[in-house]
Image (tube, rainbow over all chains, first blue to last red; front, side, top):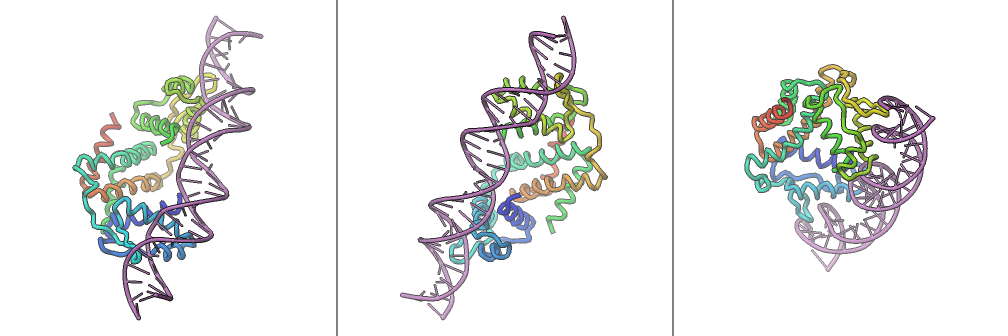
Amino acid sequence: MPIYRQLVDQVEALVAGARLRPGDTVPSVRQVAAALGVNPMTVSKAWSRLEADGVLDRDRGRGMVVAVPRDREAGSLAERKAQVRPLVDQAVVRGLQLGLTPAQLQAVMKTSLEEKLP
Amino acid sequence: MPIYRQLVDQVEALVAGARLRPGDTVPSVRQVAAALGVNPMTVSKAWSRLEADGVLDRDRGRGMVVAVPRDREAGSLAERKAQVRPLVDQAVVRGLQLGLTPAQLQAVMKTSLEEKLP
DNA sequence: CCAGGTGTATTAGTGTAGCAATACACATGT
DNA sequence: ACATGTGTATTGCTACACTAATACACCTGG
């Protein structure tokens, strides 16, 4: 899995789990790049995508900050459910393929939720 | 999303949902290719991957058949749960990101399961 | 055997994702 | 103004994913 995607997923998970809250600052592009031995541009790509997704706010000269969830992109409850649906479907298909029962799959999701929400 | 991957996902979903059962035959590479206006090799790639994943059995000169689930790749319950985990995590993160509550996410999974299992 | 069905190995072309090097634009503190 | 921090536009390169064209190998029914 590409470096920049790993970074995106990692930050998204932290924000979704409220371990990074709106207003918190994120390590600078150069800090992360140096720590990982990667080109700053690679990190910038990740930060950019996070900004495009509304997860971070950019502030040139200062750094990037966790954005307040604006519900803008959200839409109605039904729409949001429809957006997650493909990902859930993928997990479900894989689970059934492995012989897991519906109850076992639900249990996995419960575990995942508990781990993410402190 | 690549053509061959769409085919793979589609067949996997059908098999996982028991709409295609072990022993059922699958349309031939050339039939599907003609129907979609695609090169037979593209369909073959999909069929091959499905065979590698143990979903289909090959039978040169006759066609491809849905394989019996062998529990082969399965392993212990814990191992299988661990395998689905990343996919579930991805769905969960996305759901939380959209402001869905844990209960709503579980509901989405329930719906997905009900739709797949007849 | 032969005709017609099956899947596929091989090869080649095309596009693009991923990453890095460079140089630049913006903001802040002194 | 200047030094120093921030993020980034641009460019170029490389590797690999995806698709297709062709020719071949296998099996079955007559």
